[in-house]
Image 1 (cartoon, chains in turn blue, green):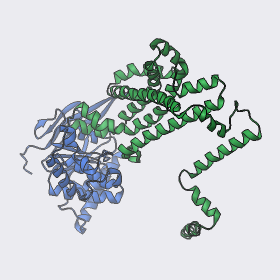
Image 2 (cartoon, chains in turn blue, brown; image 1 turned 135 degrees about the vertical axis):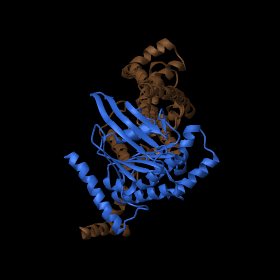
Image 3 (cartoon, chains in turn purple, blue; image 1 turned 180 degrees about the horizontal axis):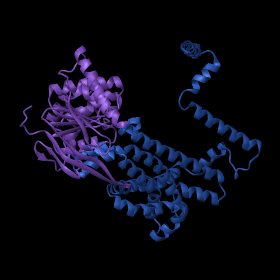
Image 4 (tube, chains in turn blue, red; image 1 turned 90 degrees about the vertical axis):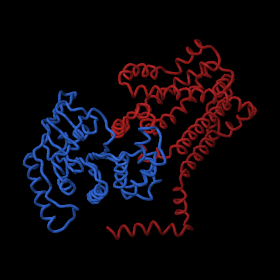
Length: 259
Length: 281
């Protein structure tokens, strides 16, 4: 990544105060970091530290109270086309089959679905490993498969930026690990800038190029650190040692604050 | 633990392979859906029939089922159909009119918290007004004819549909609303492609309640002023002290309500099968 290149995402001097019934709630304070193009950044932090708020700011769904959020050098002033979101739960449409769920963004945005849209959808369904399931209903799929559809729906508009809000936290541990490697495979086949929100240390380390560690509320960055692992990520003996040490470092960092 | 499981399974399997055992056969029969309910219903009829004879209950107090059956002969089939149609017509007209008003109002309530605050108390007042009490007033105001009967039917069916539809529209997963906003979709598409379909299970639970209420509304209107319909028939029969005839009218009403209810369920199963599964909610 060239140092001079415009970052895909930039948070500068970011603060967020929500007005709640019990008074103002400071969610974020002085958050500052960049994400380079095609970089995979994990935002790691305890529950309620404002991680998801960061993601929604990039998506243009929330305006920051103070500071600036930029995407490719321009301030975000509303929802954008070049951003795809994967939510914590798959939240598929229960009345639509898998293919219709994947083309839903086109149908919802323009009111119609072209033949080309359907071809794109089928290609993406294949990419996420669900070929042959196009005509199935969401209720016939397992949680992991449903989230694959969620990812396919986010990839459908071919966004430059993929925002993932704890996408695997509702899955069982084993499926979660499989899905992590699947995500890396998809990401390597079609590079995207990824902002991955998680509260799992090992997930952040295993997937991301960089881990941004956030504090409890009001959320601010306590560490912004490159993951010292080469790609493709695998479980070789060398990697396992580095992974263990690095994970330990992050755990100490978070536990010290929690105590 | 495991060996217990196995022995339990094998012992419950054994009678299945030997259906000659009458107790096992009965047990198997009882597991067929609907059989237990049908048997219970038949038993109730038998007890009813015999007790009216044994205790010599006068037929104006409780006519035996066979006498109620005989009550059907009081008028011709053609006349019965006329009565049924008169009631059915008002019930269905009021029901569909009610849906046509209730769903758009529910959409408006779900979209605007201010409108919701303004209208909701009025809706509760309407719902709290006993329809039986307001029926004579409505008929005096709107005169004889279909209009007051349809209004009465609307009044009784309206509220459940509005409340349930609004609840369904608000129960849409917030993530999908965020997805909609991130796609800069129009409000119309947010309603038509996300919120309304998500409300379908809620709408149908209200439609099932309201279709039986619609029959009640039509009958109440006939009690006040009518020259046709099952409600009119029951009132007319009681005024002549033909109690078993009134009972046969009641049976017709129950069957009518059941058939209508099943038809609404059938429409849901046919067009919205996904809304019956757990994921539909």
